[in-house]
Amino acid sequence: MNLIYNDKLNGYFSMSVAENWFQRNAGQPLSTFCIVLNYGEAIDIQIDLKKYQIQNNQICCINPGSIIPKIKSKDQRHCFIDFNQAFYCLELHDKELSCNGLLFGALPQPPVLNFPEEEASDNIGLIEMLKREFSYAQSNQGDMLRVLLKQLIIKCVRLAKKQLFIATDLPQEETDIIRKFQALVEKYFREKHKVADYAEMMYKSPKTLSNTFKKLNGQSPLQIIQERIVLEAKRLMNYTDKSVKEISFELGFSEPAHFSRLFKKVTGESPSEFQ
Image (cartoon, rainbow, N blue to C red):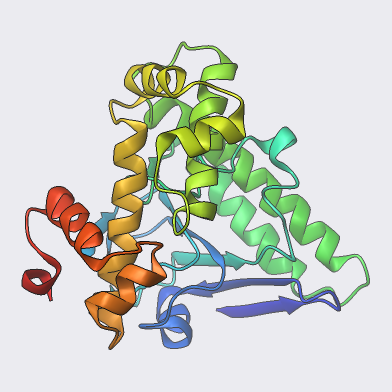
């Protein structure tokens, strides 16, 4: 399976089995949002520098910019769905989906979500509906693909709110704070390194952000910012020929020494030791 849809506005949507998807994307930073749905055997996948195993009836959401250097799978039941911003803008539809910053964003790691066993047939049915839609060469094909993608995203959002937060009975307002912060960090981490910068954009105090994060997922806002910076640094150090000095400037540091101190604080080793 290797199904691709393009429209006149540069919208892109595709469905592929793991083998075909990997041939197209191996070792390159993703230019799309990616949803991996497994309704077969367990799949081993490396995302950036970490290895993950996605079990039967699990789903994984992967950010644009991520690098997938390794996948072990020939199972036709490992479905990779890609879409770009022009096809379905998560930021534009955030009020109705509440997924921006929850499924995609500056997250501690790509979310791997467990679907209840009783929903297995629903997931397979949704995949089959998407497959069939590619056989209809009609003007409203893109609209139907977007409707089905939206249905899948809503399913994922419901699971993420139950599975990614320590507390599950908190007001919507507080989970929205987390989402919006993580979405903003993903967008601005190269230029904004302080919690106060994001608090100002959100019309919140840094203390409010810290207290909300503590209740919901145990990490501090500053950790989210710093770990996102370090993740990008690791990508650049591992997959490009850029020097530490070049990387530090690219990530918004005026002095390489400031970047090196942050990198060592988060990872326990200096950039040169990591390289």
